[in-house]
Amino acid sequence: MEKTVTHHSSAPKLIPGFANPKATREYSETHQQAGHAAVGHYSEYLRARIRLSSLGIGSFGGAATPAVDAKIAAVVARGLLEGINVVDTGAHYRYGRSLAAVGAGMRTALAQGVPREAMFLISKGGFLTLRGGPPDDMEDWFEREIVTQGLGTKEDLAKGAHVLTPDYINYQIELSRQLMGVETLDAFLVDQPEVHIPEIGKEATQRKLGKVFELLERAVSENRLRSYGITTFESLRVETDDPMFLSLPALVGLAENAARIVTGEENARHHFRIVTLPFNPVMPEGFTRFNTATGEGNIASPIQAAYQLKLYVIASHVMFKGHLARQSLEGLEQAMPCLLNPAQRALQFARSTPGIGTALAGISQPEHLDDLLAVARTPPMERKIYLAMYQKA
Image 1 (cartoon, rainbow, N blue to C red):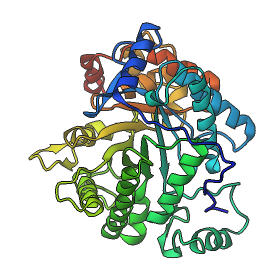
Image 2: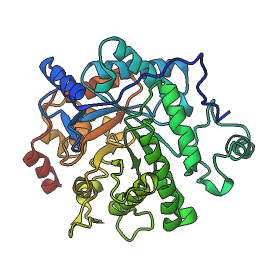
Image 3: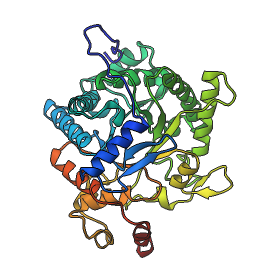
C-alpha cells in the first residue's frame, strides 16, 4: 500500500535533531585536522553559518536488491565518517529502498560518533515511489494507491510518473522520515516539477507548485523539515523564452506567498532555500547562460541569480550519466594534473565552480567513493585556473 506510513508503537523511535552551526563547524574542523578535507572543502550554507561539504553522496543508482542496500548504507556511513556531511536521497529512488539504506548508513555513523546535528540529510518527492517495484497494471495501481487514498487524481499525473499535489508530497515526506528514521529532514526538494509544463502549461504548474510550497512551509513549522527547494533538469538551464523555463525570482515569489498564507503574517520568512540543476563540462549552462532577470536590476546566470536570491546551489549529474567518469573533456586533464582519473576531474570541475555549494555524485559502489574522498582531500581549483578553462574552450 502506498499510503501506509503511520507510526506504530513497534516502529523504532525517530532520531531527533538537524544540522546546526556548532556541530557542522566542529565536524569540518575535525576532518580538516584529520586530513580528510582540504581547506575550501566546506561551503557556507547561506547565512545559517552551517558548513556543508562541497561534495555530497547521492543514492539514486543501483538495482533494488538487499546487496545494493547494504552497499549504499556502507558508502553513506564511510562518507559521513570521512568528511562528507551532505547525503541526498529521494522517495522514489530504487522504489523507496534508498531511503532505508541511507538511514542505515546514517545510524552506523551515528553509533561511531558523528552527531545527527553535523549531517545534512536531503530527500525529495514528486515521482511515484512504486514501493515493491513497478506494478503489473499501472492504471489499477494508480487508482488503488493514489486516487482511492486521496493523494491525487488522474489529472494530477504527468508523464505517467509524477504527481504534484500537497497530499502526495506530504505522503513522501512522511515516507522519507519514517524509512530514514529521522524526526526532521534538513531539506525536502520537489523533484523536477517542470515535467507538468508540457501537459498543463506553466501557469497551472506554478499554481500547483504554490499549493505544494504551502504544505512545505507547514511541514517546516511542524519541525518535519528545516527547508525546502526544487530540483530541475531543464528549467533553469534553458533560454528564457523556452516553454520549460522557470524563473528563480518567480519561485521565490511563490515561497513568499506560501509563507504569508501559512503564517498569516505579511512579512513572513519563507524556507525555500535550495535549487539543484545538472552541471558538468558538457552541461555548463548554469554558469554560462545569462537567462535570469533577478529583480535586482540585472540579468544573471542561474547560479549567480541563486546567490543574489540567497538560495544554495547543488549540482547534479556531475558525471553526465557516467560518461565523464570514463573520459575527460579536452582541457580538464591539463587544468588538474594532480587528479588521477576522469571521475575525480569531473567532481573537481563541478565543486570548484563559483557559486556551487555542493556537487552530488550518485554512489552505490564502495570503490567509487574513493574518488570522491580523494577530491575532498584536494583544495578546490583556484578561480583563475577554473575560469581559464572556459577561455580556452
